Length: 344
Image (cartoon, rainbow, N blue to C red; front, side, top):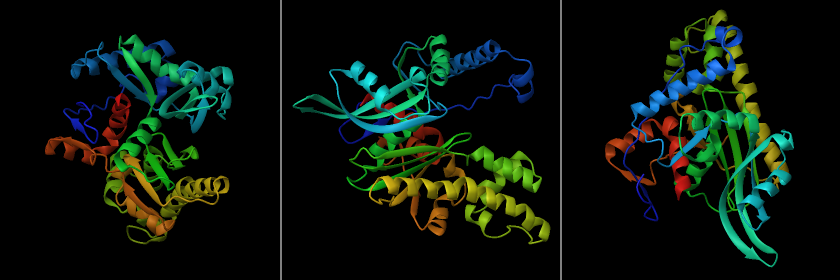
């Protein structure tokens, strides 16, 4: 990205690579490979990718990771500096982690001055320290000069704020569907009311459910997800309506309702109970959910709520080729672009 002109960033170059660890299988993960061996395999793979994309390790590098279970909250705190602010956040954030084993990262959204001192308005995330340093150790062991170590969900929220310019006082929902970790975030723009939780509905869990119940391969299940309207999975059989097919479909319907619909409704109800009955006006979908056919239409038909994919290129300039690629592959570039905005 080039310099920010006050309205847009200019996209100069984008690239990505999916890399699996062929030496790590479920079998040898449980029985053969030690933690050190797994770490070295990942380190070797990371170095290969850095070399492939000609990334200078000593330039400023921002890194984001899934981070496992995490808690995201808004806070306004009085502090002398960011070190003191971090200590205060550890004390005030409500997390399931042991205080001594909690890592807090934050973004300062704005500052002001009161009679009591400097006020920091921050978006903060708390994670299990062990999980955080698993990623951090990998990056630093590769010799990367890591300027910022962030979490994916923070990057997503950052991009949403930049791309959509949410209106003050309105409630928004971000539904981030990942391969193995999905999150839902509900918050009111301009307030400190933010609620975030993980969902059991992920792309891989849904694909496995289809593969198992329809006795089809992974590739066949992915093809089904890409070419079958998602709403169809909870309404009727998408093949000949034999009793066998209907029985198979029932398990898929139950999975979607239990792990997606019910959890979204619980999230909305909890948020409303804590925030004067406020409810989101729209769901913004990010992540691999953009590859599920008609996923954006699903929520209007089930929870009577508008939904749309986060249009991530709307606030960026660049060649038509790059912008089209970023929009088409938004499930890949959403988090890196959000992370890059930390430089602003």
